[in-house]
Length: 431
Image (cartoon, rainbow, N blue to C red):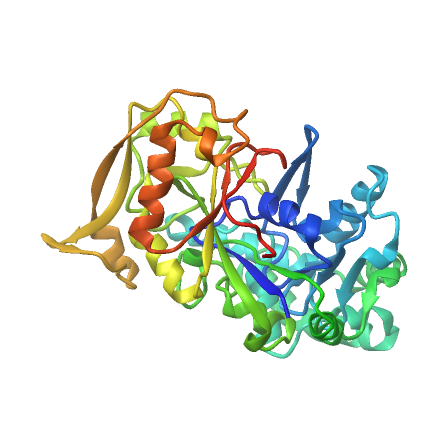
């Protein structure tokens, strides 16, 4: 039962899309298990960039089935756009390649309006959400008021749910936030229109399909969104996303037991980034941050916002290894560090003058820590043409070995560029 979970080990944007695309060459099924269109997974194949927000990153491999599981909040406007763009590019020509669970929560226009209104009202205390409506959509699911994907194909049930939900949503929008109300009729008509186009991708029970695939010995990848430090329960709360981003969410979001999972692979950059507000212990000074942002293309795939940049934080990475149960790591964007005379790596924190090696789970404490760095020799060589680990400059190999030793977890994959071919394997994925 070779179920493999791919999870972000930092604050998101680690390069999960590229990893899943590369891994999918040998996979039978790729399942997206949580999050929504706030995720942005960028794939580069033969110089062509594809950005996906909802459809799993295995879609560029025609023999790989892709599935959106119940744990995802589905922005139907966004998924239709992605489907159309992929088809226009000659991809997803067979509708059987994409399955969407009837149990997905549907994210609607009023969720986006509420999200934006809340951020505006919060002023200086805003969380820094993407404004995609993710939080309000998950709230509806928890309150047992969500419109589900399967509801789009039952006209009466859909109409009743929309009218019921909009009573509350419009009260909040108009009376509390001073926004315009959402009209149920045009929204209902639009959803019926979208349902017709989306019906070929409908699946009533994705959990059963995944279960049968695993029992048959098929290779199944479980693709997460965002990163460990944005987990609703275990991240830097309240500066987190609205879903669980750690590996356990793969089981919950898909309806597959943990005993069917074989590996849990964490994705980390060779440095650290985060988008939006919240504690960030290893954040660089403005000059270094701008240099790394420019060289690494560190701008959000969903919002275009510039990412905050910092040195690699091994304290946070060890925390991610622990809460996810990571069995190995993929180290991304090693090439971006070329040209630095020295490279700092955070190996501990100081909190109130005391050195600590475990991540404080309280965000207020994490705001106050001072990083303790170990400086390693840099390198000047361009790594993007390197195709084996052995061909890396000695300083780059030393960096990879130092990180693997410090975190006591094997690094199986190293990325030296955005393309599929710029992937260096230390150990095969499906051994």
